[in-house]
Image (cartoon, rainbow, N blue to C red; front, side, top):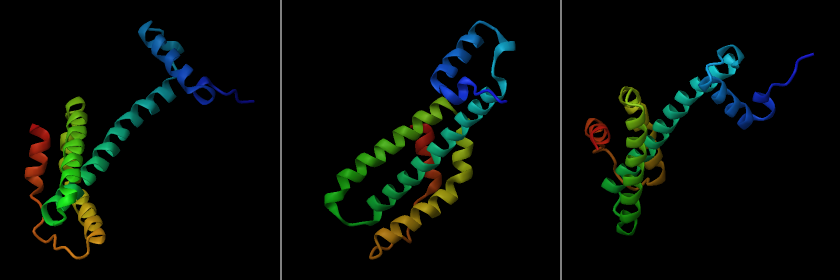
Length: 141
C-alpha cells in the first residue's frame, strides 16, 4: 500500500520541512524526486511569465503606435510601463532568460500581431515594431 507523502497532502508543510532539512544538511532525509521536480517547475514558470508578459507588452506597443484612440493612450502607456518593469524584474533575477526572450521574440510578435489585428480590424499594423529595439530596451532598462 502506497503512503501519501506530505508533498501530496500538505504542500506548504512539505516545503517548510524540505527547507529545514536542506539547511541542516540532512540530505538523506530529503524528498529528492519531488524537490527536483519543484526546482525544474520554477524555471518553467519564469519562462511562461516572460513569454506572457512579452506578448502583452508587444500588443500594447502595437496599439499605442497604430490605433488612433486618444482616450486609450494613457491606459496603454501605463500597461507598457507595467509589463516592461515586470519583465525587467524577472530578467534581473534570472539573466539567462534574456537569451530565451530573444529566442521567442518572433513567435511572441506574431501572436501579438494576430491579437491586435483581430481586435482592431480597421487599423493597419503593417509598419510593425523593431523587435531588436524593444528587447534592448527591456534588457537595458
